Length: 299
Image 1 (cartoon, rainbow, N blue to C red):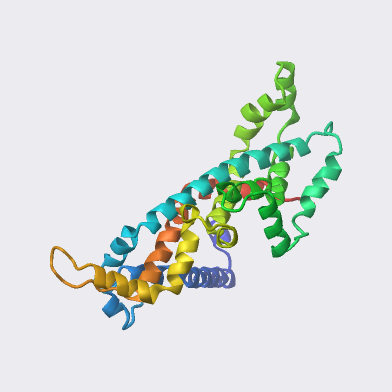
Image 2 (image 1 turned 45 degrees about the vertical axis):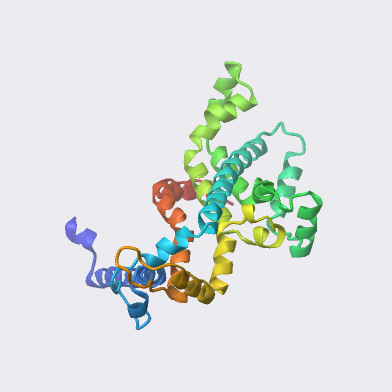
C-alpha cells in the first residue's frame, strides 16, 4: 500500500518538481512585499546601499513620524469606517437579493436576474459614472463610498448558487411554523451561508479598502480623505515630506538627527495601507476557500 501510494520514481520526481516550482513561485509573489517591509524598518542610509533578506539596523523613525502626521490617522479611520460599513451592507443586501432570485414566485425573476448580471459586462465608463454620482448628490459625501456598490452581480451569482444547494425542506418547515420571508432569510438562510458570506466579505472588504478613484475624483473635503489618496499624494511628494520631517524633529532622547529618505517614507506608508487587510485575511481564509468551492458557478 505504501509503495503504491508513493508511486513510481518518475511520479515522485514530478511531485518534487511541483513542490520546488510552487515554493519558488510563492517566493516570487511574497518577496516584493517582504522587501517593502524590511526596507521600511531599516536604517535609511544603510538600506539605500542595498538590502535583500534582512533589515539593516532596525529603525522605526519613519513609522513614528508618518503616524504623527494628523492626516494619516484620520484618513486611516475613514478608510476603516467605509470598509466596515460597505462590507456589512454589501454582504447583507447582496445575499438578500440572491435569496430573492432563488424564489420561483418572484415576479420577473429571470428578467431582473439577467438585468443585474448584465452590469458585469456593460460599463458606462468614467464620465457617465462621474455625472451620475454628482447628479445623485454624492459628491463630498460619505455615502459615495457605500451606496454605489451595495449590490454586486458577481457576489449575487456566488451566493445564489450556494443557497440553491440548500435543502428546500429548511424553508418549508419554517413556513409551516409561520415564518415569513425576512425571518427565513435572517434566521436560517443567512446564518447557514457563513462560508460564502465570509468569501464575499473578503472580496468586498479588499475591494473597498483598495478603491481610491471615487475619493480622488469626487471628494474635496479633507475630513473624508481616505488613506489610499493620502498615500498617493505622499508617494508623489515623498522627497519634500522626508526633508520636512527631518528638519522638524530631532530625537529627544539621544539628540541624533532623524534619518529619513523618500524611499523609506514610501515603504512605510505602503505597509500601513495594506496592514489591515493582511491582519484580517488569515481569520477568514478557511471560510474563504470553502465558500469559493461551494459557491462556484456550475453550468
